[in-house]
Image 1 (cartoon, rainbow, N blue to C red):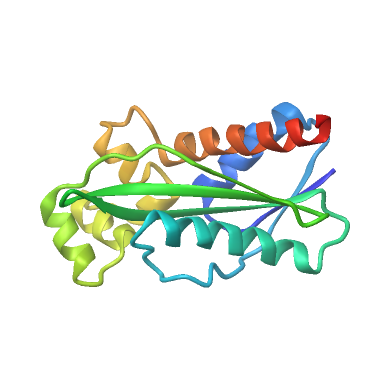
Image 2: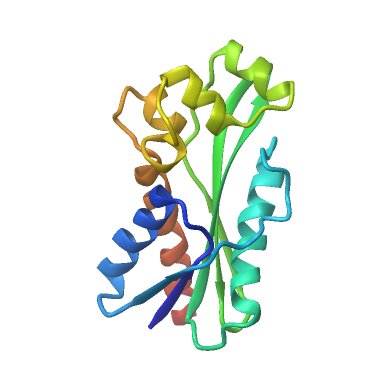
Amino acid sequence: MKILIGTNNRAKTKAVITISTKYYPNAEFENKDVPSLVSNQPMSDEETRQGAINRAKHLMVENVDAEFGIGLEGGVKEIDGTMYVCNWGALVTKGGRVFSATGAGVPLPNEIAVLLKAGSELGPIMDVFTNKNDIRHDEGAIGVFTNGLVSRSDMFEHIMLLLIGQFELSKKL
């Protein structure tokens, strides 16, 4: 079974491989850097979800030998004046069926929300905030704001469980 991953991000790739190999031990994986066709910094659940779906669909356009493609997208959303991280995943089958799921979210400090509203991206903001490089490939903002209890990969692993669960159930219905 071939599974396509619509990113080269280490945290997202780790999540897809970790969860997928539990259910498909002989799976082969291929990363492809595909466009989300949404803003570099998605600012709503809707936009973040669409980015994940776009990535997964784009993977399957030319890859008839893959069982499915996975798109994972991180973004932010505002609720009652508080900015939260949000994240979505999409699984698109070779037949074109789309499954989507969302995951954990935590509030962001106001000083980060102000920068996001001004047009900055969360990844670079978090690099400055933590004095690290490429935090989006490791713990991510979710890891920082959960004190290391939930990493970005953990968050996307949960989404992968939701996607694979839906996919497997659909084969029984």
